[in-house]
Each structure stands twice: as C-alpha cells, then as structure tokens.
Image 1 (cartoon, one colour):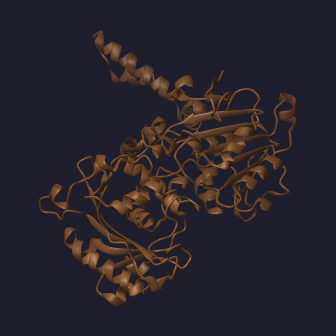
Image 2 (cartoon, helix red, strand yellow):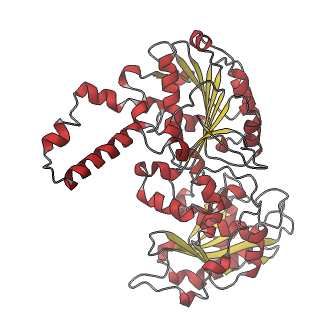
Length: 510
C-alpha cells in the first residue's frame, strides 16, 4: 500500500507515492545490523560476557559462496524507496535528491527485469551518450558494476547494446534527438536524469512512451504492461507536468540525499545540510517537486541577514591573507543586450570559515556603461589592483566569460595591463543553471554583501535567468560566475544533474 498525496492545487494530489516515512528508511541488511546492534547492547546491559565466537561464529560467519550471493542480492541492500512498486504499474517515477541512490535503483531494476525475462528488451536513455556510459553503465552504481558475475552482460559498444547471458537485451540511446529512438520496440524503458535533457525533452519523453509497446510471454501471463522507469532530480518544468498528467499506472517515489548519507562524503553532506531548507535545497537535496515557487531566483534571499558592514568587520586570520581567493568577475556586454554598453564587473573574496564551508564576500560592484572595451577592461584591472592584496598573489585574478569575443576579451584586458592574471571560460549552460546553486548558497547565508550594493541587489531581486524575465542580467551574471565555479562543490556525489560547468578553463590560465 502506498501513501496518497492530497494537496489542493498540487500536481501530485491524489497520486500514490512511496516515501521513507511510510515505507521505511532502511534496507534489510541495515535493519538486520540495527537489530544485531540492539541485541549486543541488551547483552551488555544484562552483564553477559561477549566473545568473538558469539559475535562472529554465532551470527556472521558465512561461506565464500554465501558472501558472494549476499553481496549481489539487491533485496538486502536497497531501501524501500529504491524498490520497484509492487503490483501492476506503467510508470515508476523516482524523484530523489543529489546522491540519493537513483541510479542504483534504476540499474538494479534493469538487471532484475533481464534476469526474470529472457525475452526482455530494454531501452536505456540518458542525457548524453557519454553520461549513459559513465553513469548508467560503467559508474559505481551502473549496470555493469552491479550485475553479479554470473549474470554480467556483454557490452557491445559499437552497437550500443548490453547482451545478458539468458538472451535478454538492452539498448542505449542519448536523449539528444527524438528521431534516434524511432524503430525501437521494447518492453521496458529506463529514463535517467530527465532534468538534464537539453534538446526537445518533451518529445524525447513522448518517443520513450511510444516505443514501450511490447509484452513478452511472461508479461502477458502476469498481466504486466510495458513499463517506463524514470529516475531523476526534480525540476518544476513542463516535462514534469506532462509526466504527472498521465496518471494511468503512475506511481511516485521520493527520496532525499540524507537517506543515503552513509554512502556519501561527509563534507558534501555538511554542505547539503546547510542548504537543505532553501528553495533549491528542498528540491536538490530533499527531492521535493515544487511548482508554486517565485520565478525570481534570488527572491527569497535576505541579504541583511548575512551582510557584513565593512571589510574591516571580517575576522582576520593569523598568518594568512583575509581571503583564499579573490576574483574580479567580468560579464562583457554584447550587441544583443538591451543597453548593451553596460558591463557587469563584480569583485568577490572567497574563504573557508570555521563551519568548514566556503563563504563568499561581495566587495565591490564596479559595473559601468561604456562603448569602449578598454574602459571596462581598465575598470576591471583597477578593481583587481585595489583588492588583490587580500589574497595570495596567484589566487587573485580577473575572470571573464568568453562567449562573445573569445580570446579577444582576455586580450583587451591584457592590453591594459599585461601582468594581470586573467582566466576565461565559455559558458555551456544557461544563466539560470548557473544562478540556481548560487541562490541556494545565498539563501543559506554563505554569501555576504560587504556594505550595500544597491544596484546589484536590486537586479538580483528581479533576476529570473529566463528570456523575457524581469530585469537585466549584467551584474547578476558577473556576481554568479565566481561562486558557481569556485565555491559550489564539485559534487562527486551529485550525478550528472549536479555537475558544474561543462566547459573548462583555458589551458594557458592554469
């Protein structure tokens, strides 16, 4: 039995949903371990003598074959939320926070489907071909890593197939062109991280639904329909609304990052806990699907709560500069922008505080309007010279987005001062994608305005990151870049949806 959600004006209302609160937080092995721990505690309380024989011979000793079977038995290791729904269903929609174990759940579901049905034909869809191989197939929670040695499929890279020993077969296709899915005829589809599908995501989803159309002999005998497994971090976009609108055989499952904390890096969990109550944190870590939120990404940030009166009010560090890194961030204007002669220039200092997390201090908004490139370049250089003494010499530099002008942007800065350190990056993601994790850090009071920066704060309060959104983005994007690149954790536990910029800094700037 699954819990029912019934919230007025909520797209989830009335849907069956599996949650840790209703179905349990622990796997069978975890429950057994907890029970064994309680037994030992009771023995100690009773004054019983504990021996190694009692702890090991009487409870844990297994043959090598039993250890192997135990290790590869998913029913012992997965949490209830990671288990496919019981009964007859068409769509299992698993929403989870970053690192919640979504890929593990999808991989195990595919392996079990193949084991149970030699006629199974399974389609695996992910954001890109590279991500499918790196995450869904070869990663630590991928199919090739989790399949037991006696049922490990042969990976035929040239054909993009997995051939299982019993005849079951899986195909994989990136979610980059819906036409590439045409022609497949499968019994199960596993769609991973739909939040990271960039090209025609709704049409790719519809094609996934169209190709899931066959019933094997086993499925017909058991009355099972062709099925779709979706594992993803949530995002309140049109694709999610479309999935939720088709309620026939739809079962949701929700899991948070913290449900899987034992398997994640401690620093990452500390970062997640700090951000968990922010708008982005509720979605990215608790796996909540929030539809009725303010479109302005920084709309819930209380800058006064984290504001620092002046640079002098920042606690000095004995034997160390005030900041670990100092960045003069430049968002050069382009001819496509309204008032295109306004250039965003924001200075930020970054350092680790006593809480073990990186904090950002906004020192100056030097944005200006000028049709001459050398004017904004001079302003950026002047800002660097004003603040560079507060960080190690090699850690103070100018950063500039190079989408417009490429290396010319860096050359303009160097024409003003050839000795300054300049880094550049070509953006491979939208302004909203950069701003989302930054706004979460600001909500969590990890970003501090030093003094008041009225125009920057006004622009952030209206910033949506979308075409046609409120306000311009010159200051806002310059503000977001350093935090996105150098403060937001690299998040090895985050999965594809959580990785920072796809582009890399220019090699000559390392």
